[in-house]
Length: 497
Image (tube, rainbow, N blue to C red; front, side):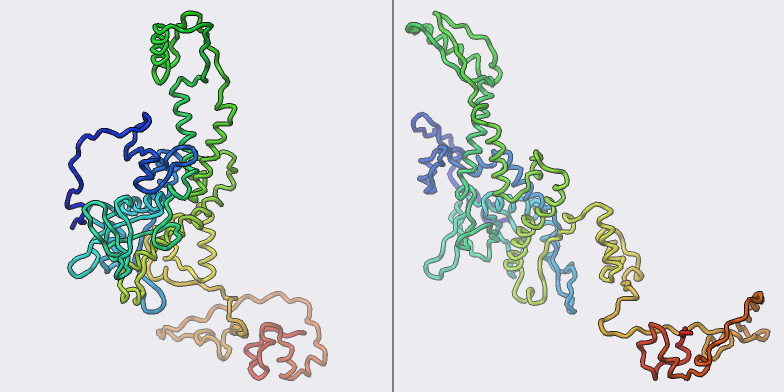
């Protein structure tokens, strides 16, 4: 199933048109002049005189790097459809048709990586990302196809007041249920504010600096100069001079020798780029563009004056402050457009897995796993799944709990003292001599007699006269918190002498 705009060819046949010019400048849709852009979109050129368009914005290396970093990072995250398990938890919804559609391939021409990368690229650059939702005869989602924002306009139906997405090619109209519309920063909640409009001066200055550098090197990387003549230069000399200048500057013609006639002298001027701190201005504009997209400079190769110790913190901030809001934007829109009310009520939800971006080095990961394992909220199989390893069976599903962790207010319980062989209440297999053939445990051999030592000290008369109450009162912890009536003789392990 192909979308409507892919099945047909719209527009007029491709014919070679003469480019319209004004004041000697060429204007077309790729590089429109200010008057043409204002006539079409109601926009004016920037203060630098440069008209900012998405194509020219992507011609700036920093802009291209920021858009690529955002789109590829989002596309690399696993997108998983979960469902409720009935006990407050959730599990992957492998049996739902949307799981494979949004995890592997949203249509028969793209992988999910291609799809998210395309839509996120438009969203990052234009603050609006669009995709057409293809549905089957039952109304279920059958596929998604990205649409260039330049092909859509948004209006509101005057009667129903519903939003209408107008497809520029073929006059096709889509309802909101047929379009997946991701918005960036928006003032009205209907459409995102395009960077080419809201921050055009930043990009216009970056374009102007880039064009200045290109022209500087295109003219042989030599500063401009002045040609001086004591009299008037003849027409023939002017023609020859013009031809020499054209043949000795620009690209492969740079650094060729010029012959000056009739007393003509060349006086070089100072380098304006050096005097105007040209490179510093370019570096500053690169940082400004990074601020607009929320991308740390080191992510796009700007590492000057960046302490190495701060890179890890910058990476965490990039995930928390830039990537996570983009993930939430996607998740909320996918839940509202692709899932029904009944499915949302059953706990179905889309979610990106950010664990891959938050993985530290091996020592830090294993330390975190140890804390979760010893704390009782991670088991071995959960840890192995995070490390992309196979489970180790049911034994790996067990949770550990420290023995000294008990609910608040619970009295500690004493362990019974080990019984000597032959004592009542001890192990029935101990102290019993087995008869031949009965399978009883043989009585262990008696330990050798210890050498006689000094006679024990005589106990004080008060100790001999102690009753059960005194003994229970003098039991050392952990039994002294136990009620007196529950303190049995078998529980008493030590008494104060």
